Length: 160
Image (cartoon, rainbow, N blue to C red; front, side):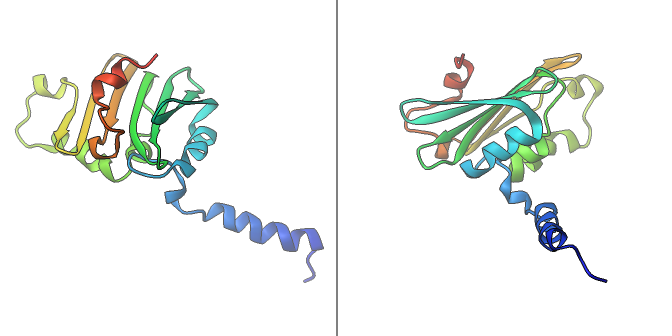
């Protein structure tokens, strides 16, 4: 069987795109290179703002919600915030830290009252806070060791 010359180029290219590794996506603690990938995958619009010692990347989701990824001077994602209807893909956004978010919900002996409480992770180098109500969710994930000097989760709450 003889392939058309353009197909000889297109087929390997298509196969390469399908098998791009998951590390190409931005995630908490990951590199800047995946922020644009996240924008294309989960959003309809992205705007970046360079501030004094970090950058903020605002991604507007198709449902009107927002995801903000904060990168330090080295291009590492040190914080992610989300808000809006429906949750974004937290498994992808949190990367290797997603298991820490799941750990409290797997605890044996939780009561129905405790299941309704927002999940909080408060470890020395990982802070995750979630909240929300029917159909509207918000959260913050933060790695203090990657944040610019003096930056804290309270600064994230004050972001416009």
